[in-house]
Image (cartoon, rainbow, N blue to C red):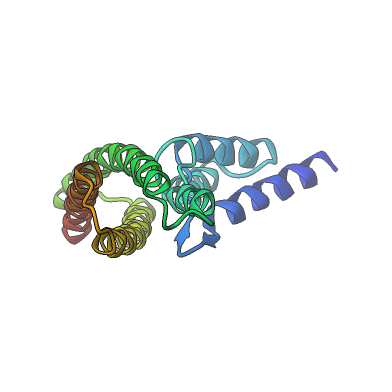
Length: 205
């Protein structure tokens, strides 16, 4: 019975980390990967298979299950009913920019981790000693991370368009609002650069 419960928990964890929400999937990181592997081991699983399961959960992003799309949905909910209020818009865009900066910081870490792992695999490939399962896992990891990052890029572009539309409707221009929209654009460019860096790692394998 205990093993059945653990296996059920593992299945729930994997499903939660793989299900898209509002155009971007929940991004689960190192904590989820470790938990998945431990649950698998306690349930009597083979070490190699458990490691693969952990990797499969871990591919979905950085540490702490950072759900950018969920944060954006909450920000939009907070703005509802106040879309035409300048102060509310300023708070909204500042919060969005703060969330995006945090997301980009995690994405940068993910790029570093991906590069290190890919470097190791490329070295093994040159020596014709690469583990095919590890290679497949890394390809899947990068494909997932790139897809999530592209989803978030699309979300950022939508936010910027919304803010520009609001700005154009204002009879008196707010310099503070202009500055925050410019910061939005800079953060988007940063996300795009890091996503391109992930894509470059994928091309190596």
